[in-house]
Image (cartoon, rainbow, N blue to C red):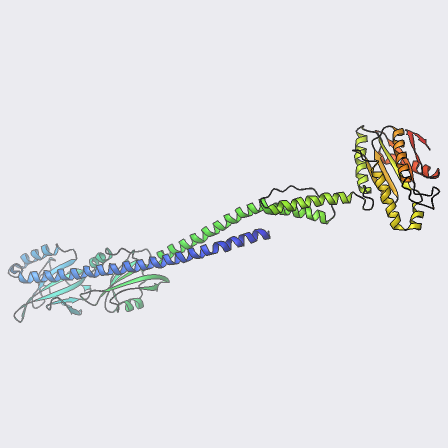
Length: 514
């Protein structure tokens, strides 16, 4: 588990620079998007300003045309109204054209039924920068058309006296709609506000409620031309403001930044999610490869090493790994298992098999006997008067004698399936595949004489040298090796009782010889 966690951490650290780079890129793209949005708003404001200036010029040109044309003044009010109506239809932004007498009484108008009405203007008027005789008013409800208009009045003079006035009023809503059509950026709300920040006309473009509060409107009424960011209703907006060229009113446009922010946030989430998925996939792939080539082999090697440390016989393992050190380590452990197994089955002093190996071999022999194979011959061998030898010469000399006996005994159990082993103390066991008791006895006699021929002095033995006593028995199919060992032990005691340095055992099943 720790290795897997380390893999995930390492991959995450490796991908961290990429993730940081993507986050910075997303932030940069967001900033660029906002900058592009602001540039587009400023460009749109300039187009709106040009449109307003053209509209103002058209209105003032119309008034000038009326003033120099005698077809309006020298006709009846009915004919004058028809001509004004035809001229007004040429301009979609104009709400009405009206001619007033010097007493502000309607002489004729493009709107029918208002002839003879008295027109009073209570709003503030602004002199045109193009024509000294033209004045513009704030957005107001027209007393003639009864709709919201931006009025203009051009005074027609005869010498110093006012001859008549031409009233040309623009539709405030139409002006706002024309301005909206000039924007490439998606807008959420727009309005025309007066000099005091009061809304003359507004339009809610995006679904929801208006966010134009009184404080915001008052602040915006002081701006001339510009774009700024502001938080309204808890959300960020771009605010575009333009002062109308003919009066102190302002055009106000709002564009929500929520879409741009959401797009940047979604892009950032996509980058993070992609990085997480890449991390998980890389971690899974690396952990799979690590598990297949590294962890699994390491676990098997660790388990084998644990068995070796615990002194248990380990199973040899085969590891095929692209990591050469694993292969070398596996070979070393298998060699260690072989060595430990040999050591665990070998008597440390004499170098022949120990009791543990003997017991295992006896089990194999019992299996053969149970299968009807055999017979097997077993001999129990004991060094005569070995305790007296140890007492006289010491344990070091006794150990050398045991080693000598073991070396001689090894020569008499070389064939496959045979075993020589140290049974315990100064007692040894020889097991061979032999069906003829006489041959087996001759084999044992040759061994006994070989020990005698070593000429190891033993003053406390009646024979004056180190000798051995031997007892043997035959294990027939259907019997067990333990039964044969017990009979061989009995034969060994007969050899000792008979004067030692001799061989006793079965001539055939159930009969013994001394």
